[in-house]
Amino acid sequence: MNATAPSTATILASVPADGALAGVRWALARDLKLAVRSRAELGVQLLFYVIVVTLFPLATTPERNLLSTMGPGVLWVAALLASLLSLPRLFATDHADGTLEQIALSPYALEALVSGKIAAHWLTTGLPVVLLAPMLGLQYYMDGESLTVLAAGLLIGTPILSLLGAIGAALTLGLKGGGGLLALLILPLYVPVLIFGAGAVDAVRAGLGATANLSLLGAGLALAVVGAPFAAAAAVRIALD
Amino acid sequence: MPFNWFKLSSPASFYPVAGTLIPWFAWGAAILAAIGLWLGFGVAPTDFQQGEVYRIIFIHVPSAWLSMFLYVVMAFWGVLALGFGTRLSGMMAQAIAPTGALMTFIALWTGALWGRPTWGTYWAWDARMTSELILLFLYLGIIALRQAIGDPRRADRACAVLSIVGVVNIPIIYFSVKWWNTLHQGASVKLTGSSMETTMLAGMLVMSFAFWFYSIAVVLARLRAIVLERERDAAWVGALPDVRGNAGVLR
Image (cartoon, rainbow over the protein chains, first blue to last red):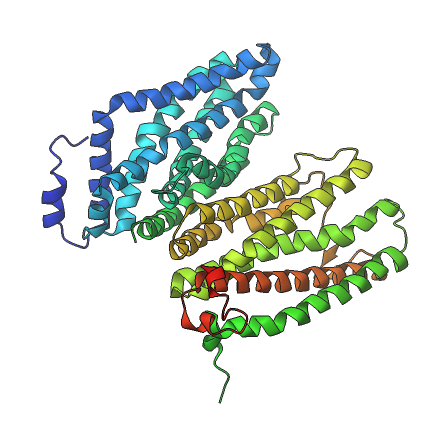
């Protein structure tokens, strides 16, 4: 957290047009600062995650074997929903007050700025989920190895959720019925992440080892890191036209 | 002098071309479907493992192929719409989406009807079926996104981005029977040869062409309607014989 981050106006007036990394850093610092200043909002999203996870044992039987079987899936689905819930924050507030247009006009590449925003989104919504999940997994009677793999999977997988989600968030900017539409657009794209993430824990429980699933998640992350910022930036430009 | 293909990228010049192509493809589809169904239900022998039930492949396989193929074609037009900003490309992508969704639905539905007597279940969480279901959601998402955006030009480009991102699903569907050894059977038709009876294969290929021609005819017909709707203020639309005097209907 950079406490002395300069204001939007001064930095936009003074930056050289070349540094892509500087653009990432600037957007990251700005969004983190904004996030820290609206801590309550972040807390609400985490509570949402906790509550969704808590609902399943109440809706089914709190039976040890059943819960430890469905635990990884529930924790992953809840992570997907929590990510979905937080996505509108990524661009919508900046879009509503016109900041996004100013950002798009800056000399930094929009792709770099979008990458910074996505990184900030993951640090404030994805990372807390990763840290919280093992504790919630204990409620589902998951063993130590499963919890480790679950956390590792979430650590690789939740950035993919932020990256893909940014595309959907940008595409639905300013549209009627944005929330439901965003879910329809993004959840199908989240499915592979869910399958490999939850599958990694299942594989460990079945004695197969999680390497294959985690490697596929890693490949997905590599692909998303390279491709998603470009798609999201293109979508932001379309929304601003 | 070579024919200038780019001339066709204008809605005004493609509209009449589409009009002349539609009957050819529509009749082609009807004739091929008649031949294909005759081959499939009259000539092809009963399968020694699956009995008569297998005959649904004459619908199931062509629609499944088309569901994936149409998605790739839609994404291709999306790339052109994004890259060149051509209006007709976006309209083409818009026209393909409902037919693609229909093909995906038919593939899933006939698969369920076939699965009940053969596997004993309408649905299984098998890799290919799940990824085909995701394909249906992608189609529906693209259609919904277009509905939500008022400005058709913005809708063209937004749908293009979404369809390009969704293309990663296509190889997953296609190779799912190879990558995950689950319930859905492997491919019977490969480039290197087929494990099927010749008449079965012929019926399936003829039906695939019938589905393909049908899709082209329907997409072009829908494209013409989209062109009329979106170009309704253009002078050439007002000068069309069908439209003259009825211009108020379009507004």
